[in-house]
Image (cartoon, rainbow, N blue to C red):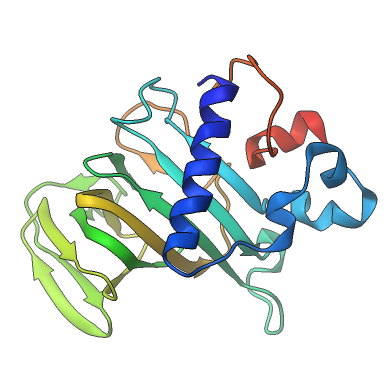
Length: 225
């Protein structure tokens, strides 16, 4: 993706979030130089911040996702009795924009439609080996109530509705009708090692630096902080 396009998506995403009465935390608006300050080291360590991905496919409008991680614990703390074992994201799934089929090994997540169109999730159960079971029905919790769908069934969430996804559930999703503002509440998030995709794709985008970054992405931190 071109950096200019990423900057444009950040501006559009911020405006969309604000249009629903939500605001990002102050660190979202730090310049790259401000984010390099020592007191902001935990933001890098915890992988918090902007995340714009086209999954390496080069067609963000067709397959991509806008994410902002507002808070995140650490993998090293998993299993402790008193620690930050949770994460929160704000995401935008554009109309008909695919977030491709994947699952996680560790993360359990609640995906919440916070506003906009209908959020559609295509669901499959996992086999005992972790692959995709294309025959077995899949059962998920929607706001505390069980819903069972056939393999590959489409779960539709209207604004205010949510679904809990365990590592045994493969899922793809997209916005229907219009763009969707999504909340994600989960256990500790690790996008470097805990995403298993059906397709051979990358989690992060390769960036063409055609202009300076408006704000650094989480994927920029290793090289720029």
